[in-house]
Amino acid sequence: MTEHKYAGFWIRVWAAIIDSILIAAITVPLLFAIYGDEYLDNDSFVQGGWDVVISYLLPAVVVIIFWVYRSATPGKMIAKLAIVDANTGEHPTTGQFIGRYLGYYVSMIPLFLGILWVGFDKRKQGWHDKLAGTVVIRTNRYVDEPSEEFDIET
Image: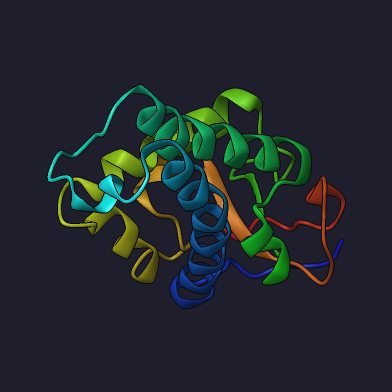
């Protein structure tokens, strides 16, 4: 069994930046196609129903699908990171992934403290990881189910 290290704060930040750029490359043109230049001129937090679908629901569905089928988003795959169950090292359940995604909101509400927690936690878990029972590990390759190589550090 190969021992893996937990993925730290900065590598996860870079993966998140890559993912954000990719999501924006899809959502921004769609929003401009629907709302036109008015999209940027409007002071409203939400422009309408399509804004909710494209800005919030579509990214959530896409991210969770990547997690379910690849254990990582494209940014995490480029950085050679994978999300695994914190206790077993196996592929998390779909419920864990959905909980992890919702946990991002909990992690961000108090001044992003739950996200910053990754930098201080011994297992490099943010609050979203703790809530979902997951950890993010470094891998040598792109993985679907890294359980064969994962040695849980306790």
